[in-house]
Length: 374
Image (cartoon, rainbow, N blue to C red; front, top):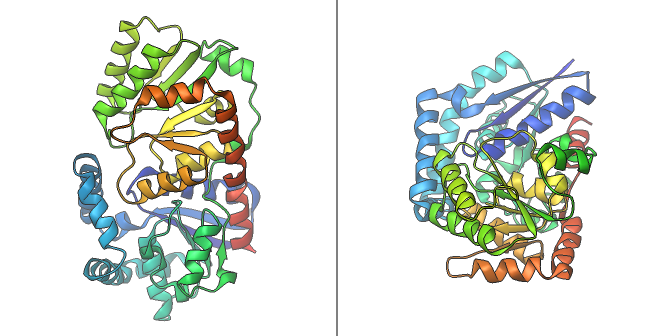
């Protein structure tokens, strides 16, 4: 039996969820492969992992401009060099794990895992195949460090593929498969049953609102956008997911109560039924994380983009707008005018929905696994 190690890192939830999707597919469909999911940074040094992930969360939440600068500066120059050198040092610790596990294939959904493994392969310490899955809609050069010793690059779309080719990566290594998503987004769901489960009416537009956000970003702006929807539009139903953000949940509930919209607005603290809810929705409002964006596209949902983190998420937002599948609500934009234009203009919403079909990669996970395991 062949061994597959799947590396991720806990800097945002998308890397882990993409890794989980890969593991789930291999376990279900390729019984001659054994898989294991590992947080590569936590394995190397738990205190460093704890400090750096906490720093990332706090910076993304409270100083997003600073995170944007770090993101930009780590493309090249001294900071990029420091990051790469650090990962070379960490790779020595990772080697112990790799010698113990003896993987045939290493799949990484975070650049740190790819960098460390490619360094070890360059030093002839390992000979496993290395696959890198880039989990955003825009490239970053940290993903490409050690590319000479990486066997597969999986990217979101052709434009990213062309960027990698411009960086002298051979075309036969690059596959625009899309970002891995759960197989649950491929399933059929009975619309009437889901509407009934969430006590929703049949003949209204449903808006799925991801309001909590992993870092609780843009609190006041999120509340304003939510209030604009609840206050000004009657022929809609809103399913708002606050996640772990209890304060946001309370704000949402107060607004719903103030405008007497309890029947048409559902506030959820947490749900594992995102695929089902996307299947009945007409529009999603969310930060443009790579995974949420991929899931929305696979569900043929246009996006209203709010509170992107400077750096990769702002680049994702720009890409979605350029392809006519998303609208980014910026600081001085009128939320009311944007929603009125969409909700009272069915042709525009339908056109955005049609555009999602050209970007959606519904079988991304299957395609990545077939290419890698072959």
